[in-house]
Image 1 (cartoon, chains in turn red, cyan):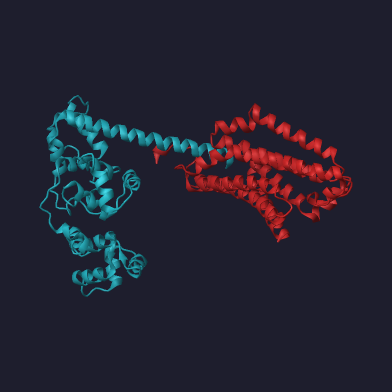
Image 2 (tube, chains in turn green, purple):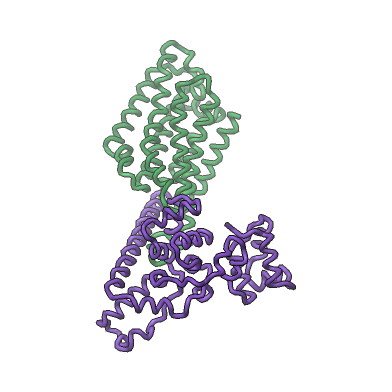
Length: 245
Length: 249
């Protein structure tokens, strides 16, 4: 179950990345390619099969887990940056890439680094599953580490949610609205994942499902909007005013 | 409410007794799959009856009157009001009339008799005909009465008007609630033509010609304003869509 979910997420992300290669080479919206690429990298690092060898190569101190967290931060920031611009959400924009937004990103990153350095990670373990049992200090710090790791995506999700819901209820093309809806679902799932983190460890599987769903929702939402553009191009819709129809 | 399939079969037998379903479809241009589906569901669309009537030279309005819920259509004694007639003239045609009347138009043909219908009016069902028709017969309370009588939520009713759509039975209910002839809404929605509804040829032009200049100017102004609002909204939507697609496409 666990493996199937993680592989599905990885395959979807990898396929989206591959499909974006031509546009990336053309130079259209490279950031979308990078979002998918980062999501794929995160998917790779979530799987034990890849995590353990990679971490061993990095010194076996769970640096890969730390890297994964930073990749997630980068991916969610890029998504939010693009979405807030696309949907003309000035409020979200300030909270994400304005001065406040960047300070929040800096704060979360600094907290993540500090907590990582304070913990003792002398053995590779995917998802830091065994780390808590290693020492008293680890057990005490681990919840904070997770709270920080999930906190930033949750913050971003909550900042984006209003503009996504607004778009969902607008008169824009169906594919765009579907995309906004899926991303809104992703934002909700991200928040739910954060809340479930505190209900651990009883809900390990539920947490995994919710977190994977969040990634899948965001990625499929982006794919929807992308399809809307492909469609608009096909009918010559993009850039032309509605009045000359 | 679409028509019951049983009654439809009886009506079809009356109008085209020896014609196969395949031929009915071929002659009327109704898709065979569409008709089959409607028959299976037991609900035949009014538009199907209209198309078949035309193919067999029957008056669509009288054909609809064959069905119980549309019995009232048989009585065509109430003529459309002048307001209804003018509501079925497109905004652009109204604006043309304003210009023609001003007499200052630079076009040479304005010196000819302006009443002679120098420009033929476009068809009755135009881009905003449904909303304009309801506005023309509304006494201020009409929408409430229709919602109550037809069991349709007021916001759904307004949405239909904005989309320039209206189900035939709602159109009839609207006419009844306003106390006007029952065919007006069917013409406004384009289900039947004005001729099929028994409107005199040239009745719309005559109603327009009878309109005082001031009234025409105000009406044309209102229509132009509504048109501007719609266009602006469409443009805003388009701009927003473009921005989304540029950033995320």
